Image (cartoon, rainbow, N blue to C red):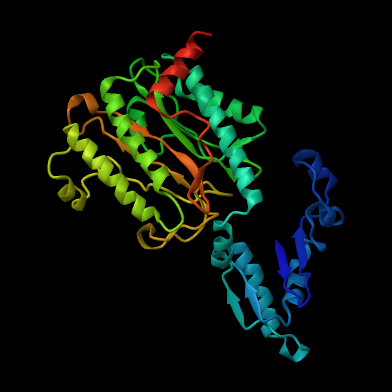
Length: 380
C-alpha cells in the first residue's frame, strides 16, 4: 500500500508498506525488494513493513484535512484505512485528530489519465507499431487448414520479438462464424478455405496497450459478398478517421458511421426502407451492436468520463480506438451470401491540435492491399 502525503513545500512525502525480505519464500517465489531497497528502486521516501501498517498508518494520517481513498475497490484496504481513521477519532484525548473528509481519488486520477503526455504518446505509438507488425505477420502466415490458436501464436511471437512481453487483452482469432462473436477467445477452430478471419489483438508495451482489429480472407482472396460487407466497414473507419478532431465527440462521429452502415446495408438488400427512418429506428443494432470507440492507455479500456451517450467533446491528448464492425449472424434473415460474415476494422488514434494521428497505420486495411500482401507472402 502506498501513502502519499501532500506537504506545504514542493516535496510531497511518500511511504510504501511492502513485504519484508524472506529468503526461504524468495527461493520459491522470487525476490522481494524489502524495505532497504525500495526507496532507491521505486523512488519512494520511506518503506515500512506491511505488517506494521496498523501501527503506522494512523500516525501518518493524524492531523490531515482530507484522505483520498478508493473506498469499495478492495475490501481489505478499506478495513485498514477505516481502522486507522477510527483509531484517530477515538484518540482525541491523546491529541490525535482524524481527517474530516474522505474523498474518492479515482475521478481525479482518471481525468489525469485521460490526457496523455508526449512521453505516454511515444510509448503508445510504439505499442501500436508492434501490434501492427503482429497483424502483418498473421496475414502473411495464414493458410487454410491452420487452427486459430496457431495464428494467435504467430501474433504473440511477434509481440515478444519486439520487446512486448504480453498481449494487452485476450487475443481474439475468430474465423468463419466465430467472427460474429464479439468476445470470442477460444481460438480453437480450424480455419477453412473461403472464410474470413477476424483478429483483435494488441500488445502491452511498457504498461500501455495497443488495440488493433483486422479482418481478412483465410485463403487470401475476398469473395464478392465478403468484400461488400468489408467495404462498408472500411468506409465507416476511414470517415471516422477524417472526422475525429478537437471539438467533435464519439457520439457525433458514431452518427455519421451509422448513416454509412445503414445506407450500405440497404444497397445490399440486408435492410429495407428509407435511410432516415431506419436510422431513427436504430435498424443497424442487430448488425453493429457495440460502441465505435473507447479510451486507450494503461488499460485497453482506459478510465475517463465519456459523458452521456459518449457526448464528451474531444481534446488534444486524448487517445481512443476507432472500431466499426458489421456482424451478420448465421441465422439472420438476410440474403444467404451474407450470413455468417463478421468484419471489424480497428485503429488507435491520438487527438492532436488539428485532427488526429493514427498510431496503428502500419498495418494495411484496404481489401486490395490485404490481398496483395497475402499473395506476396505465399510466393516466398
